Every structure is written in structure tokens, then in C-alpha cells.
Length: 312
Figure 1 (cartoon, rainbow, N blue to C red):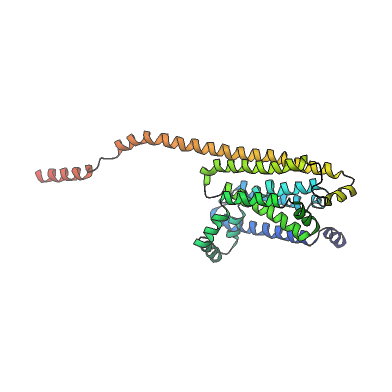
Figure 2 (figure 1 turned 135 degrees about the vertical axis):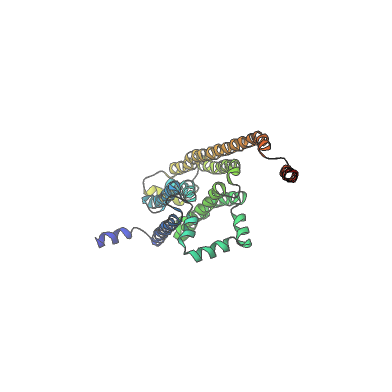
């Protein structure tokens, strides 16, 4: 058994092992935070079943993208590498954002430490920095910059040749995507910002779809390093590049469309609820006027009662 485990672990390099340990640590912290939160507020309160399932699905997606055979295949085929990136940015990132891991992290801390951290996070400097970094416009530009810059051939092939650079590339894609989805789902604009979220999803779909189109329609290899590697696997490198571009262009575009429509529907629903509240307010006002005594009525009634007492 020990030899089988050792042989299994030899499939993973140092970065894979570090990632596996980080994921296990993150899951442990999340579970600890859930236990503390539910002990105080009751089961499924604070972080409900939907958010817990979203977090679990997000972690599973990270495992599939970075620790499954897909990761080894991405060294040979550009299409597999593109699949990794789309899973990181369009599946794992929004699912983990919905899971609210930062809330679980705070609840995993001991009570005094949690109060100190919460107080520090509310301080002017850190709060202003976080508001700037998580501003939808800022993170839209950061995410777009990460996507386009890392597809520059020299940088992309550098990531293929150096595991540390490759890990940093994946971190850039995942972190900027997570901040992007956080800014839209749980940012400062709240429910009223769903319309803005739909617009930003549409803009991101446009520029990422453009990049996918350029890759798909190109008549030459963007990354010659994949030429030799794909050939060793018996795959035509240019056809594989077209498949990679299509993955960024069509399936990712469809997913962006679904998410954008979800934000748009939420925006319409919130606008309808606000309209109903506004329509209800004028109807309630006359009723409130009937039920509420006019100004000075209480004083006049008191004076009348005093006069009656004196007359008696």
C-alpha cells in the first residue's frame, strides 16, 4: 500500500503538492468556520446549503482543473491548457465567491482574534484599498489585462517552460476572476448594481470572445512550443489551436451569456420590487393620515379633559 501511495504521489510535482495542501487547508478552515458559525446562529444560518454546495463545487472544479490528468495533458495540448483556464475563471471562481470563504475564515478564528481582524478590516486605509481593488471598473480592467498579457507568446511559452511562472499565471487568472465575480455578486452596489453587473459581464464576454476569435482564425501557431509537443502526441498543432480558440469563444461565450442574463433578470426583478414599493407608498399615506391624529390633537384633548374636570 505504501509503495502504491508513493507511486501515486510521484505523479505530482512540488507545485501540485503545495496546491493540494493549500486546498486541504482551505477546506479545513471552511469547515471549522461553518461549525463555529452554526453553533452560534443555528445550522444553515449565515451560510446556507446553497453557498456550502457552491464552495464544494468550486473546490472540486479546482481539483479537476489543476490536479487531474487534464493538468498533465495541458503541457502537450493548447486546447487542454485553455480548458484549464476557462474552468478556473468561469466555473471555479464564481462558485467559490458564492461560497463566501472569507466569512467562513473569519468564523474559524477564535472570538478575540475575530474581533481584532474585523476591526482592522474596517479601518480607513485597508477599507479604502479594498474598495479600490474591488471596484467593478478597476477589476474589469485588471482581469482583461491579465487575460490578454498572459496570451502574449513570449509570456505564455515562458509559463509552459517554468512551473513557477505557470503557477503564477494560473494565480493571476483565478484571483482577478474571483475579484471580478465578487465585485459583481457581493460588491458595494448590492442588488441595485445587477444591471451594471450584466453590462460588465457583456463587456468581458466581448473582449475574451475577440481573443478567442483571433486564436481560432489564425493561420499560424501562436505558440510554436506546442507544435513539437502536439506532434509527439500525434495531434495537429494548428487544429488543436483552433479548438482552443473555439473553447474560449463559443462555450465560454455561452456561459458568459447565461451569467449575464441571470444578473439582468435579477436587476429587472429588483426594479419591479422597488416599483411595487413606490406604488404602495401613496396608497398607504391616506390610511396613515386617518389612523394618525393630527398635530396638536393630543394637547387639545388633554386641555378639554382638564376643563371638564374643573366644570365638574
